Image 1 (cartoon, protein in one colour):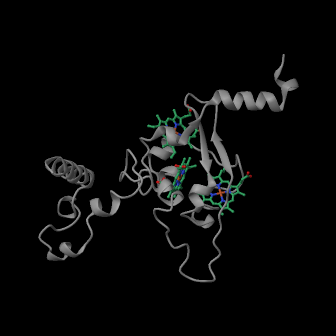
Image 2 (cartoon, rainbow, N blue to C red):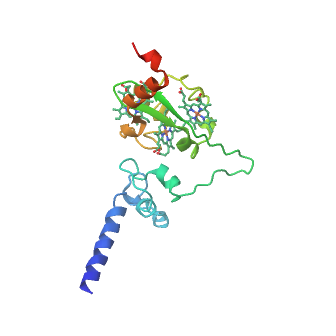
Image 3 (cartoon, rainbow, N blue to C red):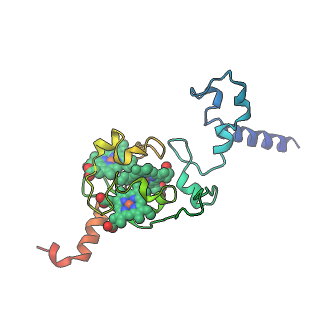
Length: 181
Ligand code: HEC
Ligand code: HEC
Ligand code: HEC
């Protein structure tokens, strides 16, 4: 019996530790803690602690949250809206000091419409855009969303995810004659 109480206490404290990773609404610095209306809102810890965990941002891996079925956001408000998903991955930067950057269309079009990016932000032609880490850090290009509403720029490896050596090997395999001396 005593053991059960100990385990129950342990589980409670683990659940408490998980929800306490998120600041309560009263302490998030955005809302008036004296507003009685706060009591009617769901606390971030209650809502987010049940979703797949991430190490940065709001600590939820939203890509996994969709892929695992933990959330199933509505794709459209109007029946006539065409829902468009694109599946390809594009390497948008390679052979620099960092691993190459892979841009995945699918993970973006699960949340966004093509017109959120094309054509004003990025031209829809592989290699037609000039990306710059400096601009991204200043909140342009990928940085318009990453660091604002999607995972933060400190997560270098999530964008710089492809080793350059593997791209070199693939290029060599595709054109062995051109790359041999
Ligand atoms: C949201 C995606 C994203 C994240 C996160 C990100 N980068 Fe980049 N990074 C890019 C893109 C796109 C480019 C291509 C720009 C270019 O060709 O110079 C780039 C280019 C670079 C470059 C110049 C090219 C090279 O490989 O030498 C460096 C250095 C760099 N990033 C470092 C970082 C570091 C360090 C972090 C983490 C603190 C980081 N990046 C996080 C998207 C990202
Ligand atoms: C989050 C921004 C974003 C969204 C949303 C997005 N794209 Fe893209 N798209 C890009 C980027 C970045 C590239 C790479 C451009 C480059 O390499 O310079 C690209 C490239 C393309 C290309 C060129 C690919 C190739 O291989 O030639 C096409 C076509 C395209 N997008 C169509 C679409 C369509 C259709 C949708 C909606 C289903 C869509 N995109 C949604 C950012 C986006
Ligand atoms: C219009 C907003 C927007 C822009 C612009 C944008 N992203 Fe994203 N990105 C998102 C959202 C939303 C997600 C999914 C939620 C999350 O992971 O935070 C995402 C997810 C990702 C993922 C995670 C995929 C995974 O499987 O975990 C990568 C990698 C990524 N973006 C790279 C980029 C790169 C590189 C650029 C610039 C070429 C870029 N994004 C531009 C909104 C954007």
